[in-house]
Amino acid sequence: MESKYRKILILRFSSIGDIVLTTPVPRCIKTQFPDCEVHYCTKQSFRSLVENNPYIDKVHILKSGLRDLIKELKKENFDFIVDLHHNIRTKLIKIALRKPSSAFNKLNYEKWLFVQFRINKLPNVHIVDRYLEAASPLGVKNDNLGLDYFIPEKDVVEKEWLPDEFQKGYVAVVIGATYYTKKLPFEKLVELCDRISKPIVLIGGKEDKEMGDRLTTFFKKHEASEHLEEKLKELGKKSVLFNACGKFNLNQSADLIRKASYVFSHDTGMMHIAAAFKKYTFSIWGNTITQFGMYPYKTKFIVFENNKLDCRPCSKLGYHKCPKKHFKCMKDLVFDFYLPE
Image (cartoon, rainbow, N blue to C red; front, side, top):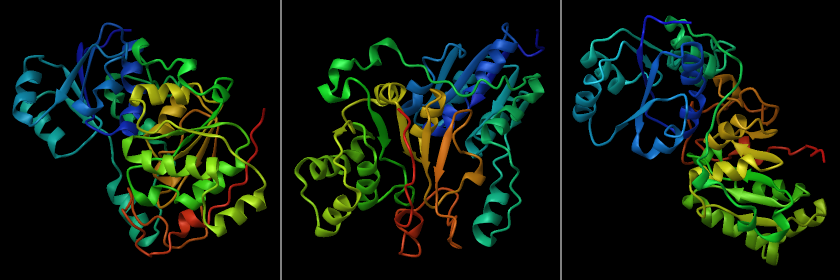
């Protein structure tokens, strides 16, 4: 097929999960219109998410300000702009480039209604389908192949880099998230890990290393409060943990997820990376809800969430502490699951 648009710019500046969720857009454009040249614009800190994507011909980086970026983009003479961020900066870029464009609907008003008044006007549509809808003026259709994540050879994690007991298989548990209200507290992470009867690799960034160390120390030396010791006796298991938080870069952490038997994750970018690899995902939700349309896409998943609270969702994103001070959305979660062999 041929398109009247030969050179297309996709805009999405952040963040990890959102960028991974946009990956069907360049793939569908490139596979359905092979003559099109696809460019992608993002921030420097997220470059590694798109620079290895074979469906993207060129990556443009937002650094300190818009002036230099706009100057660079003007030289490309694009035919069409697909705005998958839809904020003030992308509007300024579109005004400056003066090219035909489309933008995805962020549904901010509908989310506000749900958060403030529990009025649900949200469509039952995944955000990926809304991203693809923004590309529909190009004639693009959803190929239903799910998300993409491409790991360069230099970032492939060798089996020997892991301790011996993890080299025959493991479960990945993502302990990080941007906001406190999206993360399990320590006591609930202990409860979760203790229910997993397979070796566990903890996934997270440098900011999660302390929590990872605390968990591995607890299970290795059983240094814990009396309450947690009783909880372990109650469940009757002893887990084996390896803390990978802060020890690997983003692509390497993604490779650890790719090689995991199962993935447990908060509502965060790594959950979407797991979906890109079609991993059976156990998805853990705190103050946010699946109705916002960002649950695992095109993969098998199970959701853990507390639907008995009238204060949830308290935000479309998250907070650095529970507004109600009880944090029941996480503290009252029940982990009832079975891991097939």
